[in-house]
Structures are given as structure tokens and as C-alpha cells.
Image (cartoon, rainbow, N blue to C red; front, side):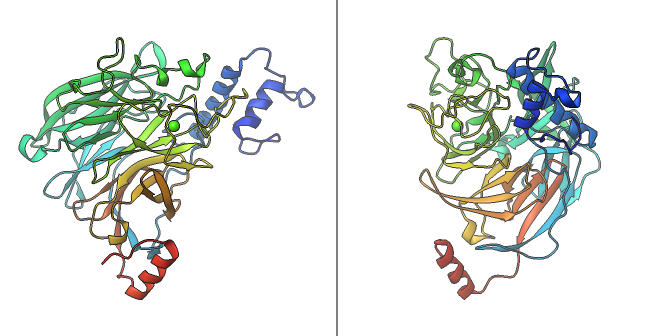
Length: 450
Ligand SMILES: [Ca+2]
């Protein structure tokens, strides 16, 4: 069943059905009597993983997500989109990567999932990685990720703190990961003053994205896709406040609990929780008004952009616009009292990746727009929201690789990092004539910037 060319279909439902019912006439027995629905789902996920491994790829996203190409060709000429034309250039190429951050003075830090913290200095990759970073010795087998996100303290210029998230297996529990938030300083190419701030359990290591608010609090996403959960959905870990998985956490820069976190007075609650009911928060970004936005991977459809507000419940797995990865007929509840609706819902699922709010000057008509990457399709989406309503969605790039992280650069250009370690930059092409801009603005309903 590892072939791409199966007689009875190779989507998840068909695979599950083939395993459950078999095709006795063709010599394949039915395993429905021996395997539970969840075990069948697990087997489907396993087949997906093996297919990727057989193709020589990395297993880097939630099991059972169909995996897109690891590498892709970049557009060579000018890319023309609704309100901006640009070229795509490669800034640096490193190994499989997860996150990046800009240092003052032109340097860029990139985390390689294998554990190396790389430095790009004025467009050139420094051959030697930062020495002495606190990456775990135990490799997380399922995702092969050790090092995850990197982020600078908002007051980095004064205090030099750099924050890392990294993951390790928790033996002997398979599929379980501990994610650690640590900080340190880089001095002459070495990681120094390391402090472990917080370690929490997390399902696999596909989240651990960091973002800072204007008060200097740090937010970290934790995931739980509950592929193997057998109990009632409203008792699943993302809905349970005692459990750190399926949450967005909020901590002080020293790893302490902020006194105004929403559940600090709730007996038994994990006090770092800011919001709950998340599946896989893959991207986190604040806009210039201080509002927090999140990209979240749903199960087979139901990828979301959420507006993150203190103490709210984002529904997973009680409500979702997607489907679980097994053959059980789970009722598709899409809304419920007390649970938040996504601002944007993506169907079919592109497997959303990183998220940024564009804050630069190079693309005036993109200012304050959300940019969400896609893992499976390699697309870059521009999303405009008005309050909590999505008013525009444009695909500005297609099939350029799995877009894991996005940031506005200090030069005002938009930077993308792919899973395969390409750091890319979008640069405006020759300015579009004013008349053409106005015509496009009329078409798209967007204001023309001065
Ligand atoms: Ca949700």
C-alpha cells in the first residue's frame, strides 16, 4: 500500500476502508475485526510516513498530512499580483530549517531542525554554526527536529537575549515530545549564559512558534492533533486546562507566569495558558495594533487563521471544519456556544505554515496584511481582515516549497523560509503605473496608497 497507484483509491478514507474491509477476492483480508477505528487511522498515518520516507523526504508535518514537494523552483521573472509586482531571490540556503530572526546590523539567525543555529551576515552564510547551543542529544524520531524557533527579546539591543525553542522525545512514551524554551546570548560565535525557562509536554514537535507582545510577554504555541484519542471529544487534552498541549502559552521574558494570565486562579490549571482548544498552531504574529493572529493546521481541511484573544476556547477538537484521520463517522460540528470561529477557513487544506503581518514600506499596498504560508501546496496567501472578517484572500506565490516561517525584514522586504532551508526574499519589481494601480484597486476594492 505504499504505491502511489492503488486500485481502490489512496486518499485517507479509501486507505482506511481498504484496511477495514479488505478485498478478499484480490487476496487482501479485512482487518476491521482486529483493529479499532483509531488503530486503522494510525495505520493510514504510518503508510503516509513510509511513503514520504521511501521517497527520500523528511517527515516534517503532522502525520497523515499529505506531504508536498520538499524543493521547488523559484519564479525567474517578475511575479505579477493584484497590487504588487515582485521578484523572488534566494538570500541563503541552509539545511532543513524552522525559524529565523533578524539581528540588528544586518545579520539573520536561522534554526536548522538538525540542531544548528546558523548566521547569515550581509547575505553570506557563515560557514560555522553558533557553537554550544542547548540542543538535545535525543533526536525526535518522528519529526527529526531538535531545534525549532528563534526569536529576539524585544529589548535585545540592551540585553542581548535570544530565545530558542527545542524538542526532545520523552522516553519511553512514543509520539511524546517535551518542548523547552531557553534563552542565551551569542558572544564571538558561541552560545553563552544559557537559561532554561520552561519545559512542557507537547505532541510531536510541529508548533513551538514564538511571538512577543508590546508589553514584553512571550507567546508559544503547543500542539495536539489527538489522532489517537479514544475518549469523548470535550475531554480531549486541548480542552483540558490542566494540560499544556493544544494551547497558546504566555510567559514573562524570564519564564515566569504573568499574574494576569486568564487561568492563574483556576485550581489545577496550567497557569501559562493564554488560549486553548488549538490543534497545531504553526504561525503566530502580532499586528501593529497589538492583536495576535495565528495559523493553525486542521485535520484534512479546516486549516484556520484565528484571532487570538485572552482566555478564549478555539474549539479543537469539539468543533472543526475538517475531518479526523480515521474511518469513524465523527459528526462535523462546526460551531458551539463559547467556542471561537476562525477568521479564515481553508478548504481544501493547504496545510498552513508560517504567518506574518507585513509591516514594511517596500510594498505599500500590502501594509498590515496577513501573509500565511502553505506547507503542502507551497503557496503564499495574502489575507486582508476587517475586524474578525476575512475580506480578501489572494495567492501571491504558488508551489515554491513548504513555507515554514515568514517575517518582514528590517529592509521592508518580505522574507520566507522553507522547510528545505531556503531563505527567500520578495523584492518589488519596477513600480506599477498609478493608473494600473487604481484599476487594480477598483477591481479588488482596496484603497490606493498615497
Ligand atoms: Ca478552531
